[in-house]
Length: 160
Image (cartoon, rainbow, N blue to C red; front, side, top):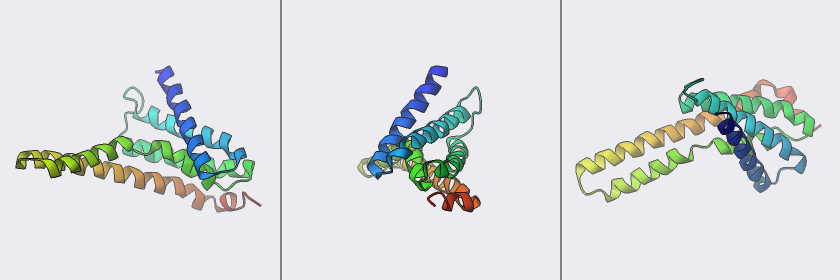
């Protein structure tokens, strides 16, 4: 499990730095972006692990997003960069791509189904995965921005 934990952290950091590079954040923010993503994604990994937290992906993502937002706010004065520069690239590795993929696949199979039972099955897949995907994304955005508004003095004075 230790290997999986570190692999998860490293891959999340690489993805966050990549998304940061695409977003054109300052180079001094890359290290913080990678560290924050690795810590947040690893927390979600631990919270979802059946031996440790065994939380649903929605709750685990919300807690990890809250930590990512908090770390971004308190790291922003260190690099003299707005918290959003680390926040959004650090959240992107936690986007529930498999749920979006399954939802889209269910929608397509719904349209191509040949019987009512197939339609019902694939519509259920579409609805379930789509709702989970939307709920996770809403939880990520909401929980990640709470620290920005909670710690206004730190978040908004980082670039001064």
